[in-house]
Length: 434
Image (cartoon, rainbow, N blue to C red):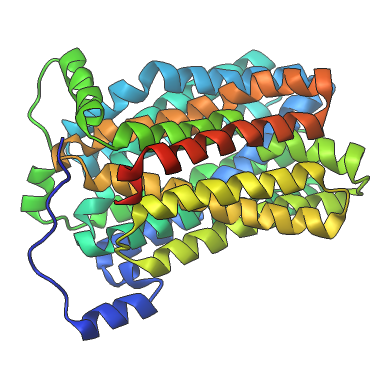
């Protein structure tokens, strides 16, 4: 498939200058601004639940890491089963109304988890089931949410909007875990003998955080032509899924772009897997210093999102993608060899910046190189990779860590991604020309 045509209208030099200065310029548009603010609150609530759910599982299983892995695997399986279906149905629906349904279901799941926790009837299989259900809902929610954004901002500000969207969850990842711990301490003082009350309190807060998104979705004013353009005519579901895969497959660069992003996600061990190991076994850190490692990576993703947002409708997206992959590889290699706390912090900061550069550029290319009515289905690929491939890659990585140790595992993983990035850079010049 050929590249989607650009708008014939060219902005004036004055308008371009203003756009380049304003990193937050996509927030000028009312619809996007309202949605963005509500998602900030909701994402913090999501992190409250992520942290509290992990602590709850450890508490009721007497610190079983296997139980944590089963919960994560349940959610990953749901994405593999429903991601393509979710994207297809999202494309065939009014995205605003569709999101009202998915966000309501997510809110109800959070309240259910809170209720079974505060009443003391919670068991691991219940958490696994709710994690599977939550992943299923997200399989439908995220493609619809991603494909809604292009209807809220003009094309020239789309990359800025996508970067600001990535700031939402990354920023929440920087703030949410700390806030979850503080709230657990606060709730513990008022638990009245119920040891599970602190966790339930965060689950209820997460449920409440969805109310803002629901109100904003109800208030959104989407131009009728944009809503109609982004909605596909209904057809057989399997044919619709095949059409989305065919759209990506026929594009001359998207398969290579997605393969690079997929390699990063599969071969790059998650922070939750490698940082505790390096912090305790290699760097010999205390809990506060280990928290700084997590914060460094989170801060890097925020800085990376701000940097990409400042670029605006950048004309060299392919080169940015490849350079980000190489910086990501280099920073991970440095981290694997580091025995110095400050050097590890710096490496993780660069790691977060580069990873966001890869992710935001990949999403922008997906959004701009396919027809509007295909965006939801194509964005389901992004959902599947982030929510499915990443946790799937952690399983072999954890086994390799047990065999050869953390540093050598990270070194091997970074080398694989680096070699493939060099292949894309040298053997696929069309990516550099994007």
